[in-house]
Length: 169
Length: 216
Image 1 (cartoon, each protein chain N blue to C red):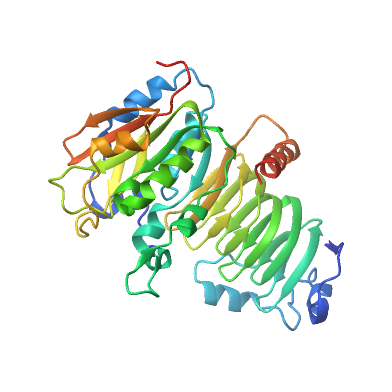
Image 2: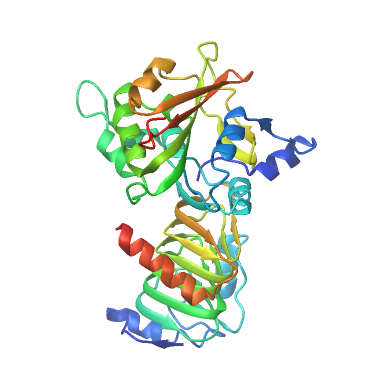
């Protein structure tokens, strides 16, 4: 992972360690804590970057490796080969581009996924969805458009969606 | 979050066979009317249901969702200003919750029971806003209660198939506002046409067509 923009203030320390998620540094939640707190929340694996609950980050995030956001994130996430999970405590104001996106928390921004977008029952999403498959649990809140596209490259679909959103606003 | 149950869970919890859904004469008419459109653009003003999304995706529809129903049913206080002696409905705030859409960009709007859930003075601006989103010839689909139906305000619907409706709830809460009459619906869309479809469920299905300019 690399950060194109510097994180704000004293969050820099957390961000600097964000890629070494096997042993979360101070300020990041332990995987066991996350699992216990969130019940059905996904488990954290050694290849996963965790933005802890007490962390606030802004900027552009890209690279390889799965991402779990339990804190606040603002900007852009571009992980086309990986899974991005927004935990139940996560608050994201960002464009999310990934292979697979799972939302338990709050996302404001467009989401595109090459494989699948899942909005779980505690999820709250305001934005447009572009993916090959979408699963929305009952109880989830969603406001936006749904575009299921299978015959065009994801990047092209995302670009079309962004242009459409831009022209509507 | 709202205490809703997924259609699939509802079926499991009752232990019954999955319901086939209630045939909807209005939906039957709507899909014939839209049959020449390969990818109709549809705005759903109810909660997002996986079943509805699946049905519309199979129809190759472009789906927009702006849930106005469940906030009205389960978080209604946000829409009322109670500072004065008389509580007033925050009409502008309510209308601002609508997803911003391009003018004349939609083929259909599924309003479900929204007209039964808002005060009378909100009907005109709400329908006016919906009509601004509809293309000429576009349609508005509503489900309105009949006078004999006193309870069922909190009924929620989804598409089981293109022509059948699934529903849940609606056995407890009484309707707050008087029945919306056919004449009132016609007055809301003076330049459109209104089609009423009677059902045995205590509700009528109403399709309001925006004039396509051809005078038909």
